[in-house]
Each structure stands twice: as C-alpha cells, then as structure tokens.
Amino acid sequence: MSAAPSIVSEAASPPSLASASEQTWDLLVVGAGPAGSAAACRAATLGLRTLLVDRSAFPRAKVCGGCLSPLGLAAVESLGLGADVRDASVPLRTLALTARGYTSHLPLRGGVAISRESLDTMLLHHAARCGATVLESTLATLAENDPSHAVALLRRGGEETRVRAARVLVADGLSGSFLPKDDTWTPTIAPRSRIGLGARLDDALSRRSLPDGVISMHCARSGYVGMVRLSDGTIDLAAAINPDALRLAESPAHAVNALLREANADVVPIALDTAFRGTGLLTRRRRVENNALLVAGDAASYVEPFTGEGMSWALTAGIAAAELVASGATSGAWASRSAALLTRRQRGCRVVSLALRSPRLIGLACRALAFWPSTAPIVQRAFAGPWGRRADRELLSSGAPS
Image 1 (tube, rainbow, N blue to C red):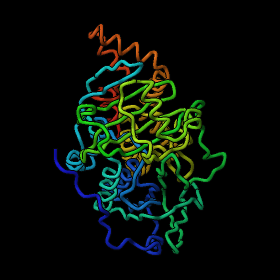
Image 2: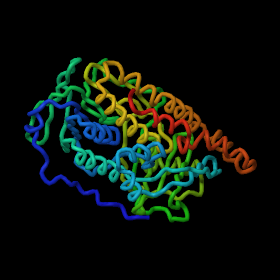
Image 3: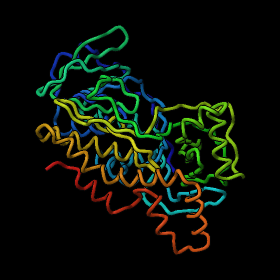
Image 4: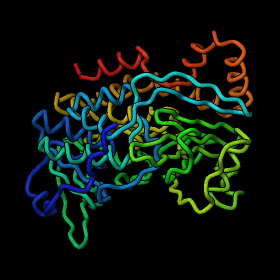
C-alpha cells in the first residue's frame, strides 16, 4: 500500500473576491465536496468558465463512511484521478455484517476506503488544475435566480461581492446555507429519519479485530455503526442513530457503545472521550432545479447510504450536471436527468435502510449464511450495495447527456 499523498492546500495566494466579480461565469459551483468538485473538474475541462466556492478551508473533516464503490472509482477515473485515489486508499474486499451476536462476511469487489479529507482536497486541487477558479473559506448565498442567470453574494473575511453566472450548481451538502429557507427550497425530511455521527479513531482496534479491507457494520434497534481502516492506520467510524436514542444517551460515545453492545456483546468499546461530529436528520429530498439553479449531491437528496453509495452518487451526479450545462440543455432537463441517474439506486438503498431497522432480520440472514452458505449470493445482493453490480456500470455509462 502506498503512502497517502500530502493534502496540504496548494493555493499560495487565493484569488480575491473582487476579481471573481469581474466576469460572468458559465457555471458557479457552490460546495467543494465530491459532487461540486467533480462538476467543476468536468465543466472546466469542457471549456466552461467555472467558479468553485466553499465556505471551508481545505483539508476539512466530514461525517462520512469513507468508502467508494466501483461506481465512484469509475467516476474519479473518468476525471483523471484514479491513480491518485488508489494511492491514498485501501482496497476493500469484505463486508462484515453483525447483528444479534451473529456475523456474516460478504465479498466486495472493486471499492476502496479513503478519508474525505484526502478525497475532497484531491478533487479541489484537480478542479483548479483543470482550469476552474477556486475560492475556499468563502460563504455564498443566493441573491437572484432568473431563467437566464443567477447572482450570488460572496463573503470572505471583510470582503463582499456579487458574482453573476449563467447557471449555478448547488452542491453544499446536508447543512448548506446557499439556498433560502422558503417553500421552494425547504427539503422534505422522511419520518423516522436518523442522525449521522462520525469520528476518527486512532488505531482503537487491533488489525485482528478490524483488518485492512473490511467494512465492519454493526446493526441494532437504534441504528447502525460502520468502521473501516484507512491508509494511515486510523479508523473511520460513521453511524446512523435514532434521534431518541442519542437524546437519552450521556454522550454520542455512550450511544455508539450501546449500539455496538447490542449488535455484538464481545465488541471492543470506543473511548468515551472520542470527539464526534454530527449531521442533521439524514433521509431527505428537495427540488433539484429552478430557473438558473441546479442542485446535486447531498443537497438534492440523501438516503442513509450503506457501503459507499453517497460519495459515488455525488460524483456521478456532479459530472452529469456539468455535462448537461455544457450541452446547453433547456430548463427542466436536470430534473429528469438526475431522476434517471439516481432514483432506482436510491430506491434500493431505502429498502436496505428499512431492513437495517430490524436487527432480527439481519441476525436471521447471518444465521442463514452460517447454516446454508448457498444463500450468500442472495444476502450479498441485498446488503452489499452497488459493489460490482451491472446496473451501476450501466448507470455510469449513461452519464453523458444526449
């Protein structure tokens, strides 16, 4: 395994906000996560005058499972970053699914584990190399949205300016602040939606307990916890937990440990002083197009992902959105295009997330595998997500607009 490349910011002198306001952009991308940076890379490569802004300085931490499925790897390969991502990641080979004291090991094909700090910073720097103008530590909010253009207000430090763009791609995630909180843009949150938690553990488990290349998933009534070892030896932990269970626990660490004990009494608990980051309620959706605005990635819709779907969907959607803008597609095209890209895959993920709410069902599946190994293909298809599925290869191949 190669050592991860440096993720220190490469920008020696970031552009001023005033310089960004001196021209009209073909595409303004708000949010430099996988969807936004992938869109900026592809848009700039296609010759669009592209401005990418994010309110954070990079590298920055995110609550994320840290896994890329084959669909996501194919997307970064198409951007020219495949070798860099593989150098900074750990190949994944197994999903260890645990519930009610039973564990099953399901094969995975073609995915990797990578930290969001590494992946997002690589994508950001690559967007700049492709020709996009990048503004970090810059807060963007919507000022105007007309059929022919949009205007955004940018703020950084003591600077403030307005920029005009023919199209704007909003990819600022679950907690984004670019869109107004009105009837048009307020997301619909699903009933019984869970809250996301994330932490980085400093080699808390031995490699015997959590080897390289294994996604360890623990399912209980209050939610599930996933852990995977990254290239630097640390462990990325991501959980989806019922709000009531989190509210009643002394701390996020107590809530996670209670879930782990319920799934498997022999599991090693995490330290109670572990620092956690959280999200809002997870499963949601909102309108994805209005006048000059397109919405992609977690900002558009979010379904509790299980094994790398979230980042992979975001990358694929960002690339498709940039290609659609470059094609000069008419209003309404993105709503139908994004639905064609993601609806089927997200529907399948919703089914899996519902199944994960029943540890009894997961425990029965694990016991069935123990006694009838021939059932492994059925369980693998149900719970191992998009790893090597033909449907996702077809989805990616249909990513270019007609």
